[in-house]
Image (cartoon, rainbow, N blue to C red; front, side):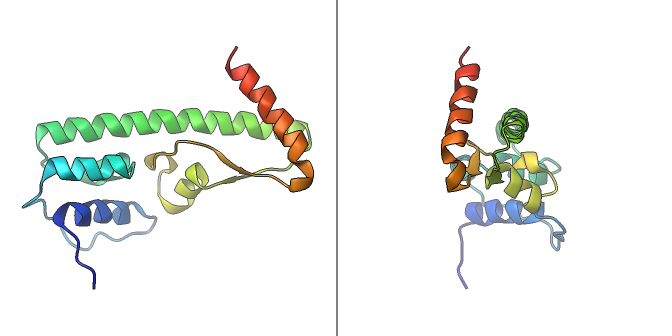
Length: 149
C-alpha cells in the first residue's frame, strides 16, 4: 500500500468525500499538518473548492479558512462563466447543425461530484466530427471575434 504525507492524504480525502454517494467513514485528522504545504498542493491541483467543501465545517487556522473560501468562490465564479460559454457554444453549434460533445472539465465534474462547480476547469474541451471540422472552426472563430468586441 502506498503511504502519503499528511497533507497529500488530506487533499486526497477531501476529493474522495466530494464524490457522489461517498460515505464519510471516519473523522478527518488535522493534526501534524503543514498548512502551507497543504495549500500549495490543493492550489497546484486546482482542488481548493473540493477541499473547502469538506474542511469548511472544521476548525481551521484563519489564514487557511480565508484562502480556501476565497479560492472556492473564485472557482465557482469561473465555472459559472464557463457554463454560460458552453451554453452559448451549444446554441451556436445547434443552429449551424454542427455536432459537438463537451469533454472533461464541467461535464466530468457534474458526473463525479454532487456539485459540478467544485472542480476548477480552465478551458472547454470539445469533440468534433472530423467531417465538420471546418464548420466548427468557423463557429469558434466567430465566437472568439464576438468575445473580443
